[in-house]
Amino acid sequence: MRITKHIAALVALVIVPLAASAAPSPAAITAVDATGKTLSLSAPARRIVSLSPAATETLFAVGAGDYVVGDTTYCDYPVAAATLPKIGGFSSSTISVERILALKPDLVVTAGRIHAPVAEALEKLGIPTFAYAPQSFAAIADAMRTLGSLAATQSMADKAAASLLAALADIEQKIATVKSADRPSVFWEIYDEPLMTAGTATFQHAIVEAGGGRDIFSDLTGSWPRVSAEEVIKRAPAFIMGADDHGDKLTAAAIAARPGWASIPAVREGRIVLLPAAIVSRPTPRIAEGVLAVAKALHPDLFR
Image (cartoon, rainbow, N blue to C red):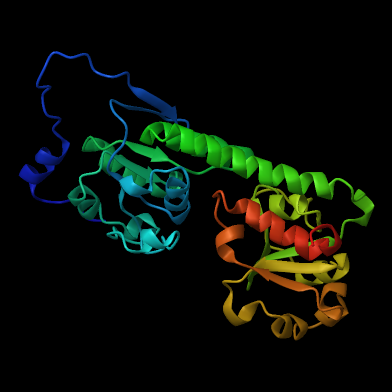
């Protein structure tokens, strides 16, 4: 991460021009972000830089896409996001504060604590930051409405949030007809070496449950607990699921070749389901698509 050495340029970026008239200023826009920090803007954000794919996607979803002037190399949705100026990758060590400042943002949206060093550097220079890191489906909707408030696109944000919640409610209504005992067991694989699954604090766990499955490791709290292959075999999941960004490590052939895994019902019956990472790994409005994809795989008769 590089802080620009051109002091004069930095000063020009952060100084606020004096008002040309005595007209009263509009009321400040106040919001609380995912870290609990209160942010106050004197005017709607019109030059926004996003530091995460999830934030970028959500900004576009709430009608603020025209105000996003920069994002990361991982921001690939929607298509317009891929063509914006890039300020680095996802981790703080790859992000250039100098590039961010060159875009003259009036708001930078981070992914929370992972971007703390960048946020601290920007705030020292007078650049407001907002952490977008929702931890539940309801929190995604709330954060969407908040971003809409910050960009003065509240009406579109409200509609987008309502649409997300309605889609989830529709799935929930259909899944409610399935008794708990009839819901298939699911092992969600995050990584193969070491073998890791989704703890109860993750979206992947929530997606499995909302999609009508029973997470075989629902007794494990936290985010990405390690598990043993022996325990997976013992718990005998009916389905094995995961994101499709694991290359050749998470395929039906690779899993079947693991010692002892051929006896697992999911492997024996060919029920290994890979889902698009963009809809099951990012806390965005498209999370409803991820839940629906799981529900269709587990309960095809309900979602024809």
